[in-house]
Length: 585
Image (cartoon, rainbow, N blue to C red):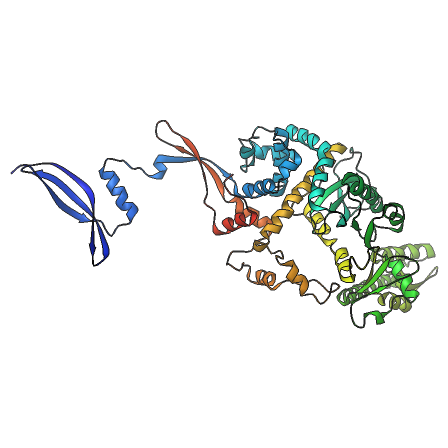
């Protein structure tokens, strides 16, 4: 009996019994004995997972296997998901084509600064280092092939894009503005570091930084709050002065003749209406100042009986010919102002009482009408309610008491504001007119993104006026991208995603805004309707950043390098679906 030529292999057997397929994987020993091929089953592998069975089969066929750590090594890991989300959105909305129709290094550098401003706003030096091949903290530089850029090249790119600002804004206006549409405009200021920029001046601070050099800039948005243009002014420029340039810009540069400008009471003044708006036939929506409202009330045009049935009423007045005045009363705002006034009155009385005491004490008594007046003036300037007090100052005494008549007169107007407009009622009824004015809040929201948690336009360190202008313009373009991202990602954010439903839940347009049931549910449960965690915009970007682009190399001779992108989590997958972009850039 001779036995030789044996082998061990995995054999798969199949048979059908009563219409059902039965399959078995058997480890068999095959050999030749006395000239005949025979098989001996060594074991049954059918209970093992299919991938293990396949590995045993291939191993018996001569393939060799090593562990992953022995075969591969990860030589670079770059956070990538947030880059894919932001850059993908920028390209989806075509902003790169708006900046320049042909790709160039300058365009790529500007795109990189826009994306980096959203992801991690830093100085140009830090941004350049973050793009570099050696110290990159994200995949942006590699994707745009600008790993070698330094801060000087970024400055040159800023110089390249500034002359294109007018053309870029014109293209954005053609997308988002139309004839007869609402145009929202507001201004803010940002403090300046240094003293050599010609734009930096001492002016009225919008961000509370007193006695610091600043710049002023205004943003034009459509009715939804999408930014289309920005302009930088000297830090001592008054708000109404900036408005003149915007009227000219919309008419001449954008070529839109009939628009409705919406601005606050400090922006669209009587002079601007007379000199800028009426001559060109433009309409406006603004609000009256407190002094004008008081004058209407004293003349009997505003009475509380107007609000017996609803919180707004339209009136007319000879001082505003051809215009509509919509008087609104917000009871919640009235209560808040009443409370704040009482707090200020009590705080003022507490400080004034201290002055009374030191004018009566035996030692080191405060004397002299001038000295007492200076001390009292400091208190009144601090709390700003001087008109509500009657004061009596002598050389050796000081007395005060509340002016109840003044307090009652002001309290009668608590919560009352008046919308002034030239728009015909047939075009915008009272509710829509008030709603249009209140939409200025979306511009204020843009400024919060500009200056604080998102884009951080301040502090400003540039010295050349053109660089400051380019810096602010790039921040506006960054907010343009972020605005589109927030709109798409609303289901994953704490933001309101059903604004129409939320608006319909309000008693009227004067009443405080209400959130839709879906938004309230997200706020309470911190989960979306499909169980995903709800995020702020910033924390969602951080989560996306955990999706990495890995550079992997084989360890064998003739090693090869390839890229492998992390598989997205369910949350990340949903985010990319909402944005309409791929994580594989």
